[in-house]
Length: 85
Image (cartoon, rainbow, N blue to C red; front, top):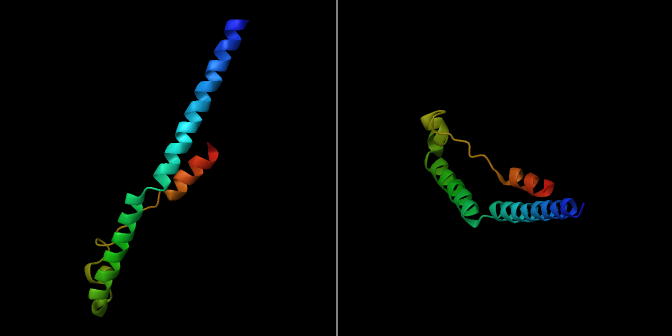
């Protein structure tokens, strides 16, 4: 009985530690300044190129659908994971 209880306590602490680590990790990834800076830089470049090609309808109008890319945001996913942990 005692060893079973001790084992259950060890498992509980392991789960508690894993939860803490995952929570900390998702918080760091969600607030990653490098990702935020990259997103800002990409938007600035897109605006600049759209301005340069405004006479021709913007960057995507000039080059067609092949120039347009979608950069998905993972911020919501990390927030969801963090909240569930």
